[in-house]
Image 1 (cartoon, rainbow, N blue to C red):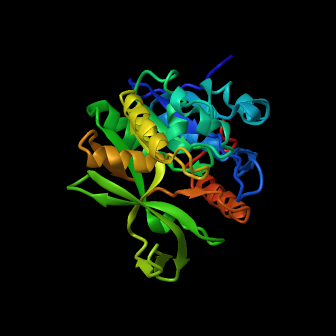
Image 2: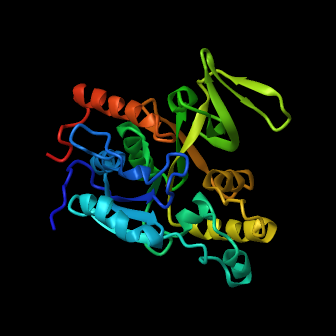
Length: 308
């Protein structure tokens, strides 16, 4: 097996990719939809950017029941490029006291639980991303530079305007800043709709709130050290004690990190990227993503074919 090697960064980090979701709104396994001119997947562009920034190992978080299909459609494309480990997000991966909740649940426990699934596989600083989101190269470079000088956690945020869909509403984590380059908290907003002059959403009070589009939002692009696993485990147990019986409740990663920050248990740097971000939330987003990638290729940002 041969791996692609990018020279220029003496440090190496892990890239944890959350890929357990089947994409219900998209209508299938959206991670396998090609967006590049030679059939490349979004996940391949993420890995290409990460490799150039100094990441040299993947930890893919998937579900056991999709392992065979995932390895056949995605894993085989990656394993010749970079070292890959697989870990599984399973409903039964909970403390023994809460197994009864797991036995009656069908919905995954959420992104915080997905990161916990990687705890045995990760022993050095690592990034966390979604499998079906395109983040751009700048975020990986910023995160690698952060790791080189700090043990604080980090979030790579994006301007809201870059993350909206033309085809429906989205949910985003609105970042509140505490001093220069510091994250204070994240507030989850749902049903955000793009408008001509920014965006709007309806709060739980029924009031329509307007946004400029310049607000910094979390797109689940994080940087951690392995110390985060013990903290997430403690928060997960608190979540299970309070909401484990709710079959729709999810243990979200942004909410968890916001809690740690508010308790003074973590320092989180906020790194803002102006690079293009796009994802595939709705099937109608696929042509837009394809055009965006082809424009980046035409501008010389990526080779075609990607691994040529």
